[in-house]
Amino acid sequence: MSRYCYSKLKNTWSYEHRQPTYSYTDPPPTSSKGLVVFDIDDTLRVVNGSWSNCQWRTAECNFPNNTLADTQTRAVNAINTFYKMGYAIAIYTKETTTQLDVPHGAGALAYVTGLASKINPDYKAQFTQDILVNYETNIMFGTGSKYGNDKGQGLIKLADRLNIPHNKVLMFDDTNSNINDITKSGICGITVSNTPNICGISDQNVSDGVNFMTSGQCRKPSIQNPSITKPSKNDKTKPDPSLGVFCAPH
Image (cartoon, rainbow, N blue to C red):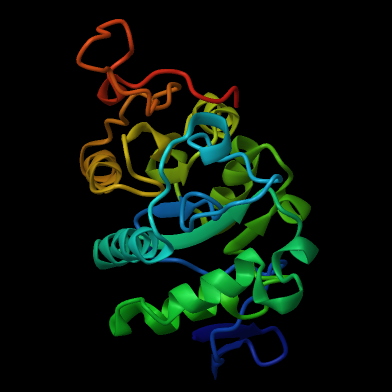
């Protein structure tokens, strides 16, 4: 990174060359035309556990989760897609920074580290730098301890630090309350849980995101979740899972 410095003593401009480094308190300059943000749990990865609030949780709805590999493949495709379009990528979770890297590699950070190895080589270095390097202070790895648990307000802070217009910010999340906070802040939020039989980011979600970034039209958030209660041949009163019905009260 180069900059010119004015010297009052010499009344001249001098040229100085510096390496581009940044931290959470010193935001990176960006030439990106937009920002795409991803939640982690049940958006980038499949999570099972009593602390998880995935809206298609098997214990709550008997909704079949996809395999980790399948969910990861779609997550990688989404990240590659938006990098290719020239957008900055960030991750924002309600977890605090200290909750991300739990023992035995079971934390969300361990998963994102593995995810980085699958990213297109053209973008892998950028993803690693922006998301994983110094994640405790890195501006692009937003946590509840950095930006607060209201993701709408947190995204505004992040976008302002990056000098990106709010109408060019998109976030994928699986929780209705987060989507409501995001959209109330005037930012486009896409619900990844509105696609039957798919856990995480679907191809339709990515298509909706691309459409928003190119047209400015954000798909109306879906606050309903698919049910796996399949209509039987003899009982026509059971709902069709493809229509989307409430499943878990999030």
